[in-house]
Length: 265
Image (tube, rainbow, N blue to C red; front, side, top):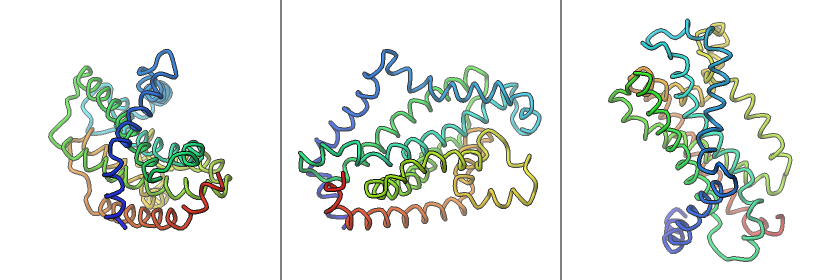
């Protein structure tokens, strides 16, 4: 199955590349500020949380030698969350949004989620450039453990793609999935230590939060970007294995649903 998928993608490689470029250009050309929105939208969230919580949280961030410690902690957490949430959010409607294309043009449908994942990675890399520039300007240079970041991005992308694909396929037939997902994403955001540190929670609740796979992914980003430490490989390998299982489930669902998908759109 994987070999057939790879052969199909190779046959349509030019279509895939032009689709990624077109998708990215559409995001820029639809607005006057264009490219800036890729930076301004996430940056505004960081600034809001930094303005509201900075005084409270800066006292609870030992090990960060900077007067901008909370902003640094926030930006590294958002670096992970933005990639995860964008892949999930766009994957849910990827087949519905491209319903007319699917009905009129014959091509491997797996190209659509790959386009979404690729453009999400590109925008995330642009935000990463902003983060690195900001860290440098505030006198907080990144260490050698930043070399772990590509590994963290692969795990984060695989986990988000698996969940997003399953939800996107189900959403074609059960539209409530699209309504329910933003609500669940809000719960997951606050259930993950992005704007707070886990040590402010009661000990019993910390153990519950650690059952959330996103906790370990965000923790890995914090370690490599903020504390210049290697990520904890054990939990991340488990999450990567879980991601592969979910991706396998997504491809199985896709094969089962594919013949009826166009009729349901």
